[in-house]
View 1 (cartoon, rainbow, N blue to C red):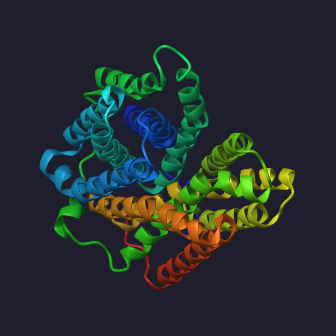
View 2: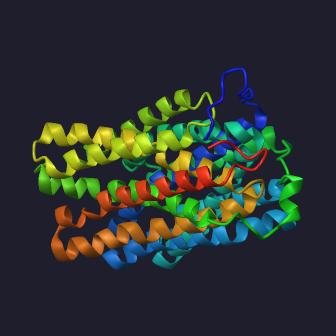
View 3: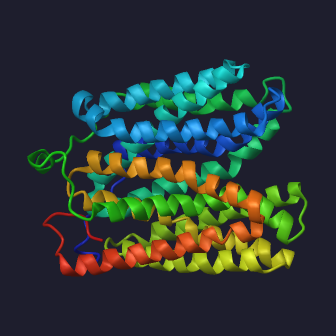
Length: 399
């Protein structure tokens, strides 16, 4: 957890590999942020009940877990570069199934395939950034997710606008495919770093206590998705905004995430601040959410939504940087374990809130959110105490 001076800190360079990872993560983010509107359009077009509608999100999370389970063995067998472009091709198949699919069995298959392929693209990109930038991986991952937030600010609006055109909302799903195709033509030969030699010496093993890092990343994802899925009904119920007004206000949450990650990019110019920044982010997220949850004044609640996003924005990239650094060179295996946790969080956190909302109402159900933030703070504290007891291994990224 040592802070490094400007002279001690390794230089941060955005080379071709870094830009390939940044842009690839942006395509993954496009599909993540598009999933909600896409499922809503399918619900309307195919006259689906809510069970079949929600099954698309469930299958996406299953694909995310599959990506986590297969990342490390596939990377070892195929190499990262081949795996990355195979995942990009799989992403294309999933997107094309959505574009061509006008039957629920096809769109359900599309959700599974696209969830698996795009998650692998994002996971390999994250691993590559961690190994390429080492002790500066916190900055690289924050910047990558800053770009993801920027994508998220316009994806729902783009889908809505294209839904009114002859091409329809499905035409928006072509854009990330064109980006991946262009990246393959321009950067297809850019080599990706192999896992460090040290990783092979104890393959299949991660440091004791690594599960705490997995839990912290999963909690960060759960905290974010609970707000993304339930901020609109919370504002509609608590602040009496119309559904359309509450949906529009949700853009302030994404804007808050964007602002938070922009600040995080600046604050991580010197490595060694990740744990401190996560602690601050949890505090800001808790303060913002409590105001959003408890205050019934519309202006305050809407402003609180921005503050909540400001805090939540850095939780995922910084906790991911900590986890990959804690892998001590076994970044493929570390990301594999982390990705399983992410998939479980995406699949269970919103579902838990939905079940509770049906029984006790949205406002009471959202007690889950501050509880998740509190548990994340406790896990962070345990990691700090563990770090003080066990000195970091030589060459491991600073935390």
